[in-house]
Image (cartoon, rainbow, N blue to C red; front, side, top):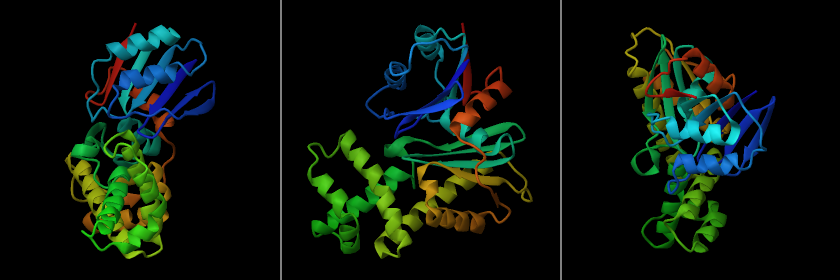
Length: 296
């Protein structure tokens, strides 16, 4: 029996024995990925898994030395083989298999993976300080910052003050406005901003349009790294929580089509949990820097 795990910035999911389980244990900037995995493993009933497939956020397109991951999986589950996979690559394979195209994962952060004829390229996924432009944290932080600045007399986005009233109450209750709770608040505010944009709230619309512009640039950049010809028609698919907003998806499709008219948009066939074992088994010798193996 195998175990598949997907670790994101807003939680973790695992699959084994043909069942999926969710854990409210997420990767945060103050904790190494390996420590987060240990906390998750402690919640999984003791048992043995032959192979473990780890789809991980926070790798920024470069899988590190797999030894600590393999040792941890061996300690908890007596695993014989462990695949460590950048979560963007797992998302890609889950969404469109091994077809040529780009998969954009829209969660708290942002990562785009492009694939063409068996080679892959990674774009963004740099974290909220140096990247993740247009993602959940970025959208929520933009909305809250403008609302807070308005209350401070430095902006005039009064529509955002009304739209994000509940989030502003949470902001006032923060003991530390630069800690993990503040980060989580920004992420949760993104949904409100997009809902407001869909209802034609002007300041929210501006933020959503700016986010779509940045994300479309990320998609184009990822595809260009595969050195395609001009007449190719890449498949484009979106995964992640923000992709549940049809309004936002339409903005993205519009901007991408304007920049790349040959793009073809499809709904994802699956997710990270589907893609991780498929891509790992397709590349038993690894696919550095996005995928590497540990074997006992």
